[in-house]
Amino acid sequence: MTTTLQLPASRVQDPNSAPPLRWGIMGPGRIATDFASSLKQHTQQQLTAVASRNHARAEDFAEQFGIGLTFDSYQALAASPDVDVVYIATPHPFHAECARIALEHGKHVLIEKPFAVNAEEAQSIVELARERNLFAMEAMWARFTPAADVIRQILANGLLGEVQHVRADLGEHFDPVRNARLFDPALGGGSLLDLGVYLIAYDAFLFGEPPLEVAAVGNRTDSGVSADVAMTLTHRTGTSQLFTTLDVRTPTAAFVKGSTAMLEIHTPFYAPTAISLRANDASSEVRQDFSVQSQVDGLCFEAAEVARCITAGLTESPHHTLDGTVETLRVLDRAESLIPAVGVALNSV
Ligand SMILES: NC(=O)c1ccc[n+]([C@@H]2O[C@H](COP(=O)([O-])OP(=O)(O)OC[C@H]3O[C@@H](n4cnc5c(N)ncnc54)[C@H](OP(=O)(O)O)[C@@H]3O)[C@@H](O)[C@H]2O)c1
Image (cartoon, rainbow, N blue to C red; front, top):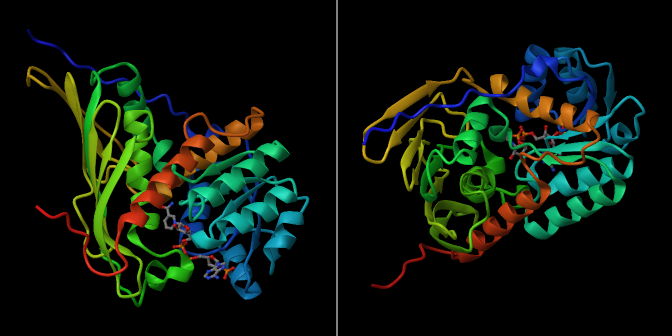
């Protein structure tokens, strides 16, 4: 029998049409630069304030993006009446503290990935946001692109049948000197928190729920952070094999085997340039290309989602929930605990 597969169209609206909010930025580093560029190029969002521990850095950043207010403390930015929502772009160990400061000053928060360094810390942010009735979300930008919406519909419409297997990898080559943060335990370094978070969150998106069991083998850098890590996750309906590394750029592709069709998510899976859907019996195949090529083109979608949710009175995004975010950190905690302090974990045969 011949099946004709058809891909749904993306329902993601133009980020430029999202209602403008006033944004304050904590931590004007690398990703904050991409975020501000993306907002400037693709949205009506207003960048009103920036805070750095170093005032000169805040001023440079403000000049680059036409931001009116600069602060030399995160507290002062959080207290500003000219800010609606704070984008937290500090290294992971400071996310929880920055979020607490912002939420206690009545500000909504968008927090860079990973939301926190472990599930317990993430849960404390979630509880504070809920207590204050404020919006909070992890900046998992991969959830909000047009490609993600097409995949969301493929899953929801049962075009794959039951999801039975996911395979994905995410590795990059990081020079330990130029990328010291990634190798420094005090700054939350390691492949799991920096890159593994994308894999685990994406896997939960594809299966629609967190795994039941986590197995991981891998090793650590000389500084003691996670390096090469291979994970096998067991879900109710299938399994996943995920690999991350700080050592080499991997293909960064993903595929999802369903009971009736297979979805290939072309590299890089977190912002795919194309997807292909193929019937398991090879009777039909369809492909769609996407235009998001860079973070600057992609980060605007998460900002638009935040603006739309806050304007609609929501305290979290239905597409990237707070409970889901905590679950992802629980999986990362478990994987981290399985990687030995020295050497490679091997199962005997
Ligand atoms: N979404 C993505 O695609 C993506 C990509 C890269 C990184 N990220 C995430 O974004 C966060 C920041 O990463 P990044 O690469 O932008 O880092 P970065 O370039 O090192 O910038 C981090 C900023 O945090 C501030 N900071 C506050 N306390 C600090 C401390 N004790 N040590 C160092 N910096 C401190 C610094 O700002 P001041 O000194 O000016 O206050 C600095 O500008 C991380 O959580 C990372 O996972 C996300």
